Image (cartoon, rainbow, N blue to C red; front, top):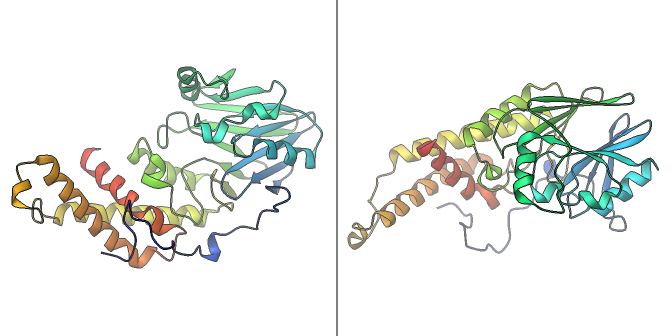
Length: 309
């Protein structure tokens, strides 16, 4: 067993966050950090969630409004311009990224992929209004002299999760897929399609961006961050595949439990995951922030996908 607390066991403390994963600190008086990404394009974050907004001649386009800091988002916009928010782009349907949209005020045009519209219609959540403009594959949002290119690349994190690309500024925002400098959120960011998730990270690397907004954690990303995550994911897949093939079913279980197929299988899966974690830890625990927090989850998600997908 590696010296990492398994799921359900609280460590004295987690591994320290390496400097390469950190961003400038948040001003406690403001509660957010504002970062310019190019002409009229800005990141807003409290170093856990990320949004961006684009200022054009007569208004502002917001991409995502997390409920945790939607009021801060309004303050951040006011630092830059007094123009109204005219459009909001939903990256996808999840509450933690768009549940603060009403805090922006006014009646902006809401834009999303059609699967996001379907999920929000089903949810009937007054804090996540159904978008009035939807698209299937691609949508070009031209506002004054500014442009955002929205595109859908299939299911990975969830249906409807889109790429938002600002071509002039060479900024790409894709939420809950790549986590620059960090271990992905648990179980490959709760990916609903794990093979699709692998494909999508590779597709992100093919976009000609200079700055990547991942929607979470502290700093912006680069192609080097995408390739680091791809390398980790390849190692994860290899380690889980090897563990599945080399772990003997029923070897370390009380004979009295062998008539219980659920117990036999649970014992096998747990030992597969231990081997997967042991394989990855020497190389990766010092390369991705919060490696120790979610490595068990990643190995569970990977071995499950390899068995059933």
